[in-house]
Image: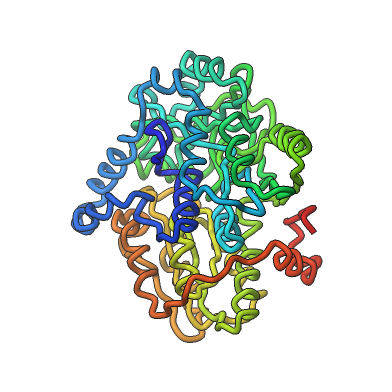
Length: 464
């Protein structure tokens, strides 16, 4: 089965579902999650040598193709979408099923446990032509009728209309970001759970506590200006020299953004967990004799050191070397080749300064690595807060033997369309080829957490 066209493929939730489901089928992750796109690698290599402005246009057009007409989004049946997501996974018995926040480190954790993950949040891309990226005031009510139709048809959704003119500048020219969060499992997810969970199995909610200022537009309808990345929420609204310079760099008609006032804080549109789902999971588990457990983490990257250390511990328990670190970036990740290469995965949300700082902090606390492989997601924009290629080189210099960029050209970053194809090629080029391991047991994961008390203060669980 494939994901419906109304769900963005160029997104964390869909890309991670595809990566994990293919892993559980014993397959690698193709570029942008679609095997057919491998045929575009030569074209992407040619496009990488075009002038920057032309590459930006290509980014805008390619991503904007995903935008769907408003009528399609308003008429969407989210349970049909959920059925297509569940249908991607092998239909066999699992001791655990994870449901909740999108997260690259969580994807690697699920791969280690050999279990599926069901996303709470999905991105529905709405075709957009009449709203400027630099006009959040115009964006907030641009799709009210479409939003109301979607929400009336799907009463178990909360809609977060996200507008980020910093990182999503090129895509916002052609599509609006409707991120929807489930408040209930719904029939398709419930059927999947009863079909595949072992008797007495665990439903584990993955709950990212990331919040963001929002504006309430209507019932179950929020507007989020800005997003997790290189700058904090208040800088989007207050402006400053970095914003002014960025807008001048892109020839914008304004020197700062004017956004509707925020009236609350809500779960962040892409990464945050909507807590209403937790209650429905607990009630469902109680009715069917399952156990409901929670994995809670403060921010998207809070899980990254935990999972990296877990993999390293796991390799050593199996008598394997654990001296190769693979640094993922947003949707550039591949659980299959990570394990085949015997690599320790460390996931970064974006190639921005907060992620760079977090990675250095992890390397400061960990035993040294002989080899470092660095993926950098290229969104095409020289956005505020993006760490430079030279700053990322400093990370690679921390390798005891060799550090390499994984498929991205540092001279073209952050505007290298070939990076989406080069990343998988770089992973396949790692010389180690390990046989697929037996899944890590949940008991082993519990033992790992028990033996490292206090090491990960931003992560909490009631699994142990």
